[in-house]
Structures are given as structure tokens and as C-alpha cells.
Length: 264
Length: 306
Image (tube, rainbow over all chains, first blue to last red; front, side, top):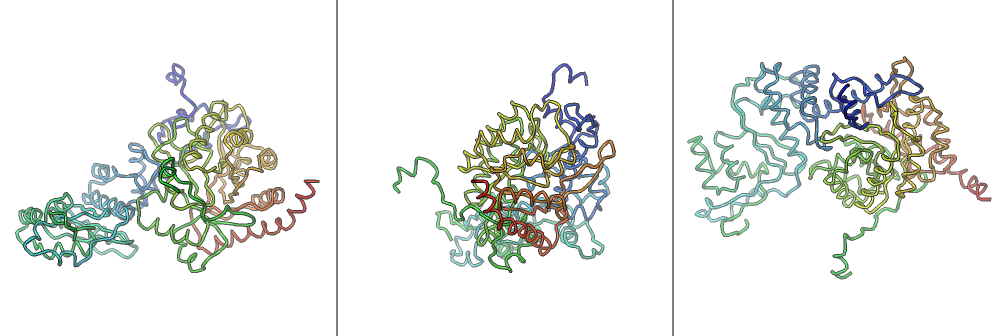
């Protein structure tokens, strides 16, 4: 309180200070009517803020919520909100730091795959809201002369995302986004996930070994030949033809371009 | 139109729908209701959406809104412009809001007399403000800025509040009346908010309504509220939007409509969302009151004019 006396805060600052900080007392700038107290009244705002932000995180991370259970999730979300409240009014953009928070959250240490599952959920929502674009047709490469194929450069679809993990996040994600029963999952298989949204539906699928580095190289603007070389460094058995076909089929790209700017 | 004229400024796009008139009712639009709504085909009703939910680049939200907008008038309801806040409006957010107005040509556009951002934190709630000459001047500047950006007047909504500020020097109705006078904005009268605030602050909702500039009202909101208790153990109403409209709110609504004639009226229901038929029935109940009062309103106006 002495601080307040030295430099009077605006009514707004005083009101804002305690909204997500439970250690603050009810601000003295407000009151109830006819001399009534304002503590429970102020708590309505505190509750609205925290509960609505917990619900915003729950809407972004439903699999994490299902895995941890509601009470665990709400406590974890509440801790995160206090440290990292939103800075944008667009709540579907909130929670980008939540996976990193989960990773170091004391009570989540027994679930080392939880943070990557959250990363996948965040990518899912980004794909959901990404700009619409016509995906590359599945026969797009048929028009390219075989000796020029390695020079083809791809343009990523705005929804395309790649998430790599040491854990079985695609399986965990798929099992926990629905409401059906969940069997036992071996979480220890490394999973690289491709997230796409060619039209309205977001798709999540496994990438083969080497597939993630391959796709990331293509997204970065490397040629098909360069990307294939990167993938083969990771996995000798990487199948270039079937991988690129599957990625095109998934809607990962919007254009295939030859070096001389011929658009195929 | 030649290119030189066009380059003077943004083209004024004509409204595809004339403003709503008469006994039109609407409901909050929820995606899960879309198939049921589309199956019914073209209706008179309008739908209201929270602007922020459609500020993503693309995807299913826009597709749903396009499908809805094809056959129905739209009300664009901004929730987080923070018009009542102490800091300048978020220009990026205002630009996004403007793009939505341009894209969907809503018949109604509204925002709240409230704030939600302080410094860099977005609180995701409609927070109350002190009613002083200084805050009045700032709110008016913010309303001007929004209206200039979208090139249309907005409807400003009265808040529901749980506390009052010691530094306030005028009543909420005076504050709102002066905003409307200075900025030319219209008003969105949320009758549930009036009832909630009246109960919470111990004033008469009818007195509030008699001091409210009803001639400026371009839309009415009705919603359900929940009941808690204040520090003294007396009822504290919460603007929860999660249940049917309460009886005293219906009564106040009828009082307003008898006085003003028919005004586009929206049922707000944002949480514990019911199936479409239940929400639709709530709107039909509002429509019945509008129709009943509309039939008698012209005579009342003739009396008033004599």
C-alpha cells in the first residue's frame, strides 16, 4: 500500500493489478453501493478472467485436458495464465508458450510426452485458422520431365505444419481428441507429424523416418533433389517418390515450380 | 467511376441489406447450430457473431459465416476493442475489425462500453470504468476512431457491472447519453445488463430506462443471468448468458418495446448452449412481444405527436 501513496495509480491500473494476482487485496478505487464492501464483487471479475482463460486453453488443448483430467489441467492452466497472460484479444492465438510451460511443470514430469502432444494440438489449431488455398493437384508432377524433377521447388500450403517428437504423439493425439475409449499406448515410439488442411478438415498423419527433414527442406524452398539428399542422410530407406506423392495427396503444397519459373 | 476518383480513398461499399427494421429477432450464432439453421432455409431472423472469432485468416469459421450470411442479416458484435480503456485503441485490431465489416457487410455493428486490455495484458472480460469527464472524453475519441475506421456508426452497449468506482462523477445513463450525443453513435440496450446492474447496485431498472436515451437504441440484447451473493449476503447477479431470459427481464423488455416500438432484438446465449430449437423458441418469445407491441405502437406514436 505505501507504494500507492507515493505515486497514485490510475483507477484502471489498480483494478487490473489484482485480476490475475490472487495475492492482491481488493482495490480501494472501487466500492459496492451504499457503503457495501467490494471483495466478492471484485472476485466476480477475477473469476471471469481466470475461468475464461482456462477455458480458452482447454479449447486449444483438449487432448492434454483429457490426458491429465480436468482438475490437473485447470491447476496447470491457472499457473500458466498467472505467468503468461494473453497479450492479444485473439484467444485462438493464445497459449503458444503453454507446451514449454508443460515441459517444465513440476507435476507433469511423469508425462514427458505431454508437451509435444500440446505442440501438436497448437499446430492443429493454427492449421484450422490458416488462410484458405487450393492444394496442389495429385498429378502435378506428371507434367515435369523426369530429368528436371530434382529441380522442382514447392510452395507450402498456409496450413502445413510439421511437429517432431521423441514420443508417439500422433497416436496419443488421435486417441485423446475423441471421446471413445483409449487403450494402452506405447508412448516411446518417436513420431513426426504432418498437419495439413487442404479444405475444411485438418488432417494429422505420421511422417516416415526422414520425412520431417525432407518436408522442412521443401518448405524452406530447397529443391526436391536437395531435400531428398537431406532425408537420405537421416534414413537410407527414405522413399522419395512415395513420400512426395503422399505429401501432395495430404495437401501440404499449393504449387510446384521449376527453377525457370515454369509453374506446374 | 474513373481511377483518379477511386484513389481518393476507400470505396464506399453499399449495404447489401438495408438496416433491420421492425420486429426482427436474432440469436447468437453457434457453429453447432449451423446444419439446423441451414436446413430451415431463409428466415427473417438475424444472427450475431463475436467479431474476434472470425479474425483468423481462413478455415471453417469463415466458411460457416459465409454460409450463414448468404441468407441472413448479420450483426457483428465486437467484444474486445477496449473502447472504455485508458490506452489508445489497438490499431491492428481495429484494422481486423474493419476488414470483417468490409467482407461481411453486417446489418448491425456493436461494441461494449468496457475495457479488456491494460498495458500489454488482455483480460478477456468486459471490465467497468469510472464515469468522469476524463474517461468520457477518451471513450468519445475511441468511438470516433472506430466509426471513422469502418465509416459507419456503431451501437455501443451498456455494461453489466458488479462494482462502482469511487471517482465516478456522473451516472451511467448520463455518461452514455453524452457519448451518443458527442459521437453520433447508436446504442445497444442490453436489458439483462440493466436488470443485473440495477439489482447489484440497488437502483430501479425502470428509472435507469427512463433516463436512458431510448431514441438512440438500434438493437436490444436479452440474456439469462445467474445469482450469487455479495459480501453482505445479498443477491449479486452475474451476467452469465447460460440460461433462459428471466421473467423480470421479459417484463422490462415489453415496457421498452411499448415505449419505443419494435427494435431488432437478440437472444444472447454463449455458454451451456442449448439445442437450436430451444434457442429459436426463446427468439420466438421475443418476437411475440415485438409483434404484440408493434401492432399498438403506431397509435401510441400518433398520440405522442398530437
